[in-house]
Length: 526
Image 1: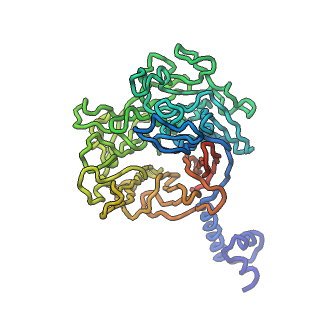
Image 2 (image 1 turned 120 degrees about the horizontal axis):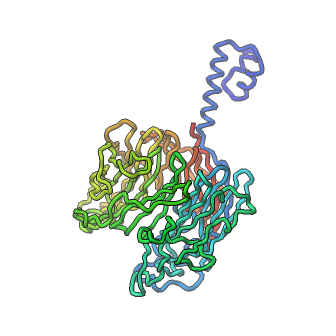
Image 3 (image 1 turned 135 degrees about the vertical axis):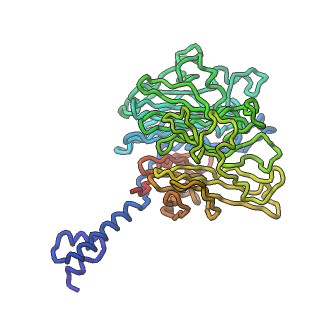
């Protein structure tokens, strides 16, 4: 073989040399071109860590004891931060959003004695991080700042139309009551917390990225000159009854740049999803609109039920996927059951709601069976009341090709029973199919994401980020990325945009004040 034919071997260095040297035959040139195309495609499909940036050294974390309904009134007054429900409050929930060449992140300031709402902006071109500290401090469980409350996440959005920043935060079904009520009068005219900026605030210089960009509350219920919390999103106190008892704020951006926001109204086994829309031209939010009715028994249903899942705007439509938590305490399920899904063909979700078969559903929804997909409990043998535990490991997504994917887990409620069972389930409906395929040949995961026509399981293994990938409409997950060393993380939350995962993470450690990082991971989407 002469030196020119050796240059035709399908390696990158050979292919570069071929471009510079003559002497290959037409067949050899075709092979080389194919090899280059294959190499380029492989490079594009590779999942890579693009950057890691420390956002702060001190974000709030709950490091004390987990309290319950018998102990929450006697929390520690020492350094440890006792909590109700979970330990995570920063890098938790809807806390990270990319906008142009910036990434915005919300968090609470650590440690236990601080708790301020914080907003950071990373400039990905310069690497600079600028942070705004708000006067509001984490309320704590039922208004007790000594008991951390993991439900009280900070939802975040940036309007791509006018550059306004929006945050809804620190609430868990709060309402006005008196000293004899559940909240002991701690949330009078403070049960909903919304902060927003002036137009263009997202784009200002680092020097101007300050609290002065945000609008103070000067209404009749203002708490004073340093109050940036608004009781309604509409700006009208006459609407305040429309903003009572909400939890879990989350924002989405539609294909035309409109912001949509949703929350859960009510409680665990009697709740509803409510959503509203931002008019960027008028700089005003609408009132909330229900996806389903709360208090379903008053609408003719035999029992009340709540939702554990997500409303999402994905692939150009507003959609809902959830597990149901029934007020029927005598069925097989300790907490949740079922998988339910619906989507709207209306651009703003204001009607035209359908189940996965394209059949119209009642809107607002009352009978969840209208949109039921399948029952994870059917993959368990237990029949006695409260024997099956379906909590955690639930998520869903829809690809650009309209492949629908759900992941869920089910196990025996009693981990010590001799016939203990546990199953991870991947239910998916390829585009054009009539029914879902249900697979238990699935390693499991807590969250599923999409970019293009691909689906991804992204999470932490031994404190390090990992990525698994499959083609939409399949169950063929393959490992694509696993961090091997460096900083170990406790938990995180992810936002996907333009083929990149923005993984917002809290470092493992001790104490109530821990570092936060942002990893930007290129998912290698073609």
